[in-house]
Length: 333
Image (cartoon, rainbow, N blue to C red; front, side, top):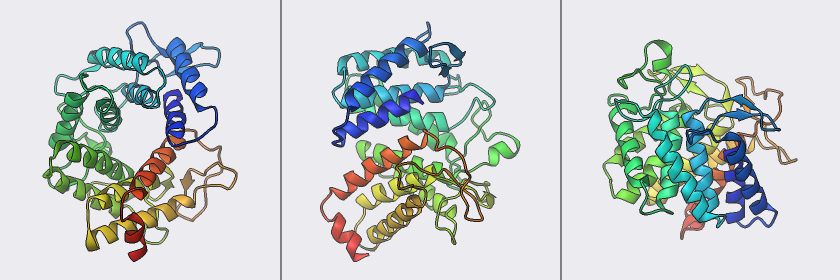
């Protein structure tokens, strides 16, 4: 979580916020280095405010966000060389989590999963733009290869969450889980990779992922729900905030590559996603997280994890809106 929040503030600085973002980023990442870095170069998952270790586990998911935060800081001009050193040191340490069948092994009850790889891909793409001589391009290509071979179901075109050690679908209900939000998030990332590599055949898979994500948009509430099964029946009608941001990002980036009616349809999807996301936002600057099927929100503190999703959606919206023809295309729809 510390890394995610550090990324948010570096992104705020890059987007023009004039508050004390630079000090927050450098200070928080220096503290993270002191309290969370283990002797093996990986980062533990949880410490107390005084630095006392609460959970020494080096989750792959957390390593990916550490890499992403370092990239965000470097891009914003904060200790760029030092952040590159940290990132390269961490990616070398990640070799200890390598899985013989490809990819990396996560801690916990689901050691073989797509989600941590997705965030590692996001971090690699961020570093690829900053460190051309680093390992990032090869690692990103490797993760996309895993997605093509294993994560994306060849018959259904959807992406699964959990797997067995040979990367076949996990047994039981775990192997059947399909999250609409992750279909959108992978579609966004794979579109970026496809454009960087000139790999247009991948876009057929991307569009199937996007279509699957849309199968999880509730027709009445117009929000993306949390979970489907692998036959695309509804598994959970709860709708968290973060899938709405991923739907918005995917629609926008796909619209950037289209013209005519296809572009108009995607921009309409983006407008629908933005309207859905707005339901979660509060006038005081906070947000709700869990929308229930009856239209009520779960009463709970705003989770800090949502801010990363909101910020990256804002970055994509700003990037898309800055391209020629965006306003005209939106108005035409």
